[in-house]
Length: 378
Ligand code: HEM
Image (cartoon, rainbow, N blue to C red):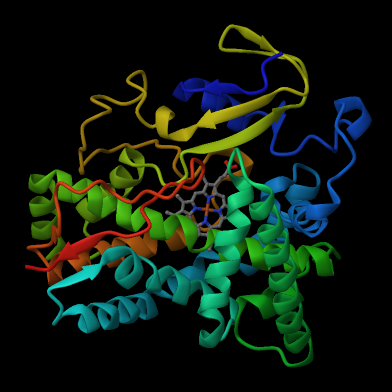
């Protein structure tokens, strides 16, 4: 049996994501012995405990319960309430950059907004934002297909520090509730069910990580796309004058996420022997779903390699599909629909500092993006 089966076609990817014959975990179906796995690695025991307690690595019925509870606290209304604050943060960031001739788009523009927003949403003080970024960067290294022993150690250490930090805030909110998402998660109840302490910690860490990593990359990748296809940037600049809710801005953001997918690959286990795309896949096999490839499948999208900012409908899988569909998609969309047009309005003449220089992509295959992007404003 192959170590991993790669799925590239839209139909296969969407079939897997919508079917309960596949899952992000398999341990609820088969024991370690049945899977022929060695005992758990004690060097990442804390990381494994975190993984065991959040949405992404659980399947029904645990996932259903968790998603119900977290979704009740992290509502679309809570996201919509952030609209003015998002605009304010973007404007302040651009104001600071106004006098600069060059800046690093990743560090100076793409990163601040999602990090500030997710911290404020959950109720994390500004002084801890740098810790959060470092912990998150260390943790997500273990989601990649390969990692070193040093990365494993760093990720486990980051989970230990991050958990202690979140545990402290949770204890504070239990004593003194505040108007933030951590308090809402502490208090949320449905049908007599509440989040356990481990689930609370796991959920907060997941939200803090997922709440900024992909949005940072989505922003910088969108600008790379625009800088390479100038006519589309010029069209976007013209539309940006119409404000963030113009229909074109919305379709453009979806198309940018399809065209360069921030999270190009997620995995699923096969939970029972089944047929997929005319091939039998065995229980216990691992599938790598190439979302970026599905997003360019000519069987699903007309002219898939062309950027069409008005593409509609645009059934991309950049936010996934099925029960694990991105819980933060409304927030990510809000941030991108406000940030990208604001940047276009402020710096219509934006250019890469060095058009010929190779782009500084990080090593990630699961989380894809550049580590810096030097631009000039005029
Ligand atoms: C452009 C930005 C974003 C992209 C491209 C993105 C993409 C994704 C994808 C593809 C999944 C599904 C993974 C799978 O199929 O296994 C997912 C799940 C998730 N995302 Fe996002 N995401 C983004 C932003 C956010 C934000 C801002 C938040 C939180 C504030 C967030 C929170 C989550 C959570 C909690 C899940 C797990 C849902 C579940 O398992 O039920 N994401 N995201």
